[in-house]
Image (cartoon, one colour):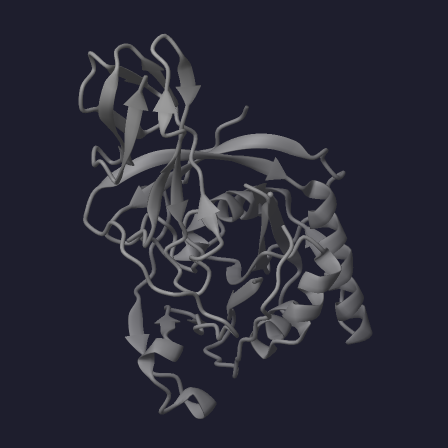
Length: 341
C-alpha cells in the first residue's frame, strides 16, 4: 500500500493547486546523525491561512498553508485508496531520542535523480545537481518518516527545519513509502499535480534525495533547493543508525506491541523488540518502526526474580508467569505475558 505526500513552494508568494493519489499495493525493508538544534536555525514567522483558488472551501483536513515571510509553502493532505482501520495505542506527552537502523540506498537515490532530471529535460528545464548536505538531510528525514510519515517531524518541528538551508534556500519536500522501484515511485509522483509541480519547478537548482529501507519497507524523501551545488560521487550503500527525536504528543502511536516469544526456559536468554505502528492513519496497518533496543528504550519485569530483562534481551530465572514491559520516554507503552518454564 504505497503512499506519497507532498509539500511545496518557494518564491514570491505563490500558491499552486495540488492533489494527491495513492495505490493499494506495495512491495517491500555505525554512524549516528543527530537532528540540528532548533536554536541554530532562523525560525520565520508562521501563520495558518486559507489558500485562494481551487483549495478554497475545502475542509481544513485537506489543506493548510505555512505562510512565511518571503513565500508560502503548501502541505496538502494526501488521499489514499484504502485507509487502514483504527486501533488503540498510546497517546500522551514526553520527549525522547530513539535510534532507527536501516539501509541508506544511494544507488536508488541517484537513480531517482536521473529520473527527475529526465522529466525536467522533457519539460525544457535545467537539470538538478545532487546537493551533498541536502542529501544528508533527506536521509535523516527518510529515517524520521519510518517513525511518523508526515511533513511534521516526529519532534513536532516543520519538516524543512531538517536542513540549515531552511530559512534561505529550501522550499519543497516530496515523501513516498512502500515503493521499492524508483521507476514506479517516479510514475506516481508525476501523476500527482503537487509532486509534479515540485519536480518541474524552474526555480530549483539542486536536490537532496534520501532512500532508507527499514524492516523491509522503503521510505523516500526529496528536498528541493535553490542553492547551487555540484553533484558528488555516488556513495556506497550503507547500513546506518540515525537518532530520531520523538514528541509523544505528536506521535500518538495507534498500535504498540512487543515482538517476543511467549515462553522461555529457566537459564535461557532470548531477544525481544518494540514495534511502533506509524501514527499516520493511512499507513499504520502496514508501516511500522522497530527502534534499536539499546538506545532510549524503557523496559521492565514484573518479577525480576523470575525474568531478568535487559536492553533487547530477557533471561529466564525461575518458573512462573511474568509481565514484560517495553516503551520509550520513560513510559511503558506495551506489555507481554512471558511464561518461564
